[in-house]
Image (cartoon, rainbow, N blue to C red; front, side, top):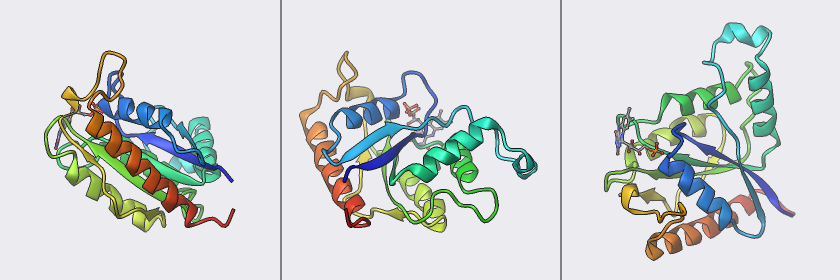
Length: 184
Ligand code: FNR
């Protein structure tokens, strides 16, 4: 059956290239995936004290994370790491203590950058907490998308046919990865 994929974008910027990539990926989503962006910008900074009476945004986010069958991250690189807002969302979803909402699901990462390096450092930094919270991260193929300033046309679609084809193939690999963890 169709698997529900929570798409998480690591940039809050209105014109974010990562959001554009995520929206394009949703437009070209494989037949057996149901991909939807789950927003993270509204989440208060994680503080254990708040878990006695968690903010409504946390409760809603945790529910969406728990209900998803898999996770797809689109992240920029900030100072050779991931943006704090993304780490915050990971932490919020992993709690309250003993109630990790992420565990046991497949996941994958697309990193991107305005530089040619494609956010390689962020891509690998993100793997560390995801492995710890028990998400099965796809190792291959990897997705590092560089030179994002040159990638999109005026409709915010990936104009470069090679990049479009790359993302399309990569999404098919992700689809196959997700279904390895389900029998239906
Ligand atoms: C960056 N950028 C960046 N790029 C990169 O390749 N490696 C890095 O370490 C950093 N560091 C960094 C830190 C901070 C605080 C900012 C704001 C930016 C540049 C980054 O690739 C660029 O801003 C992207 O456009 C961010 O992605 P979105 O917002 O377009 O999705």
